[in-house]
Amino acid sequence: MPVGGTIRLLRTGALLAALLAVGGCSTQIADLPAVGLPADAPPRPKEAGSYLPVHDLPPDRAEAAMDPEEQKRIQSELIAARDRQASTGAAPTPPAR
View 1 (tube, helix red, strand yellow):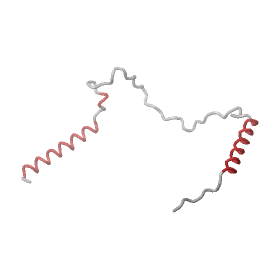
View 2 (cartoon, rainbow, N blue to C red):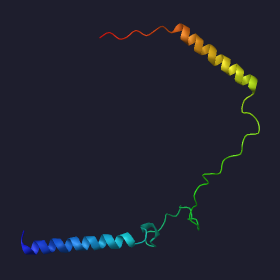
View 3 (cartoon, rainbow, N blue to C red):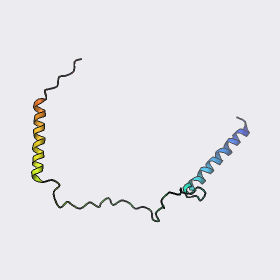
View 4 (cartoon, rainbow, N blue to C red):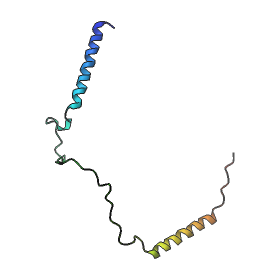
């Protein structure tokens, strides 16, 4: 590579590095007045968003989600379905090789 080509390559590299350095410090493109936001975009909030309340737990339920009688009925139905399925199912045969 000739000397002139090397200098040209170094200049281009230095210019590219300078552009990247300056571009990292610039404002966001959407905030520029020439580009702007679309007309139907909602306005931005004045304050930055805060973190979600991670440690705030919902209050305990005052009443049970299911009546005890209904829970016993559902449990007995599930047990009966399990027993029916176990009695009708035969031991699976291994596939032939």
